Amino acid sequence: MDSVIKSLSDAIYYNLIREQRYMQFIQGLGISLQLTLYAAVLGTIIGLFMALAKLGRIKWLQGLATLYVDVIRGTPAVVQLVLIYYAILGSSNLPKIVVASVAFGINSGAYVCELIRAGILAVDRGQMEAARSLGFSYSHSMIYIIIPQAIKNILPALANEFIVLLKETAIAGYIALDDLTRAGNIVRGRTFDAYTPFIVVALIYLYITTILTWLLNKLEGRLRESD
Amino acid sequence: MIEVVNLHKYFGMLQVLKGVNTRIKKQEVVCVIGASGSGKSTFLRCLNLLEEPTSGEIIIDGIPLVEQRKDINRLRQKVGMVFQQFNLFPHMTVMENITLAPMKLKGMSKVEAHDKARDLLSKVGLPDKDNEYPNRLSGGQKQRVAIARALAMDPEVMLFDEPTSALDPEMVGEVLNVMKQLANEGMTMVVVTHEMGFAKEVGDRIMFMDEGIIYEEGAPQELFDNPQRDRTREFLGKVL
Image 1 (cartoon, rainbow over the protein chains, first blue to last red):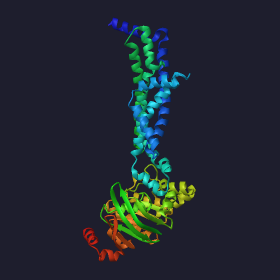
Image 2 (image 1 turned 120 degrees about the horizontal axis):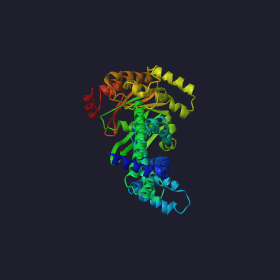
Image 3 (image 1 turned 90 degrees about the vertical axis):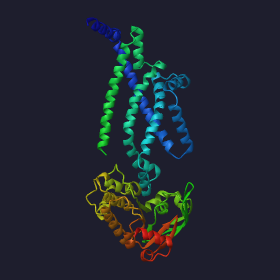
Image 4 (image 1 turned 60 degrees about the horizontal axis):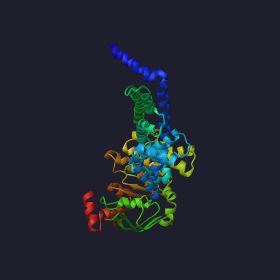
């Protein structure tokens, strides 16, 4: 029993306390959260425009949006990240967090596009007909009638997408961005302890996603109330 | 006021309207009857271009179809429509449902639009429902709000697409009464309906549609009591 406690406290000491290694994790978490936030904002903007392009009647825009969604969803995120880093943005002197935010934003945009599209299509067809029959243009019908109703369908799925996105950003280490997962890697490299740093990393992710899931459930509850 | 010349409509390969010709005069109440699939709803929806006609001409107030297409939103402001499924906006109160279009499209002030909406709500017998959301209303109440919403734009014609077909039987009367009142006030109306009693009482003219054409038409007494053609007799024999 004593030896178990001893090895546990040693593990904590070497992996967290010594040389202020806990700061690695805290800074890593900060990077992961920032990255998720920027990518989520960018992904939502890209997704919204792509969804409107897909739903619209302009053929080449429709084709472009379809191609974008198919390519992004059909290739691994880590490959996209590395390609965007080296081939497209690596030649400039942009900070890595910006490059990674763009890469994850582009990736997330494809999934958000489909969420928004599905949310808009789920609004009853009669709503558009009623709005048009009153004399509203297509875009005004969208703005006043369809999108406010679609938002209710979209919000919970969108929040869920951001929780997924937080975990997806764990591959940012591939372009040497010091996110939470890479912090675990760095500490492991110093302590040669394979388990403890990643158990710490896993617990932090779990803690954050649990909070976000709890918030998501509250949001869903409130949306359902207003029905 | 509305003239329809040789109207054709295809859905892909399926021909739904096969040359519809008619004239609807101002203040006339036309009831369109017929079996389902006869093209009566499609005909009605062509009148405000919710369905795009494949060929033919629709002239409203002397303005031909080609011209209307350029200014389709203005045309629809003059042509009110009431749907079978009501299609009220569920995220808005009754008041907001009625005032949205006049305020946004006609630039009516909020005070003015609210006054008008209150008048219309009294007219359809729902003076105290202005702050309710549609899902709190019964089917009959929803449809009366939908009528008020369409009337708020001061349309010159009202189109009704089976307005009582989705209602419980006990609510049909309240909606038909509002429509009857509207007809008495001189509104031009085109009503697709299965309510033969209403058609007979309120209609100035009955149009029987069959397989994409106006198979027979006439004053209610003539058409209901003395139909001239086989399929009209057959249809009326089934529904009356």
